Image 1: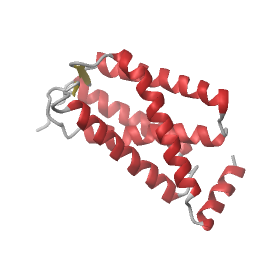
Image 2: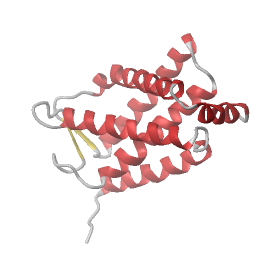
Image 3: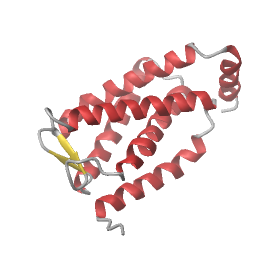
Image 4: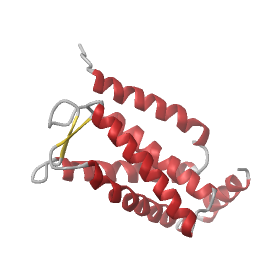
Length: 172
């Protein structure tokens, strides 16, 4: 029998809200692009969280223990990829470059730090040798890396899939 504490319910609630917010944006990119964004995000987050959360660094824990809890699958396989997809949705829709991109990164960094703070106060994250301020430069760097991966994916698509992206961009 499962015995969920508030932090697990917070994960479930966040996952549900993420899915609901994702649905209007979910058809922006062709399926292959969506899958590649999803897979990249899962691999990136899993790797980063494992490196930073495990020995020798052990900077933070998730939920109630230092061990991986199955409910984190929701975060790593649903919430984070949805955030990445949504980030790229607006980036691609508005073709952000230059100063507008800097502003966009600042807004997303603010949203991300605020959400991380919510995770802290709701017991989803417990810092050991990490501080919320350390996340401020981390989010824009991760976002720029995501944009780089997205541009790489777009530039290497077969012509028939590129044309699907053009059609979807014209339908916005």
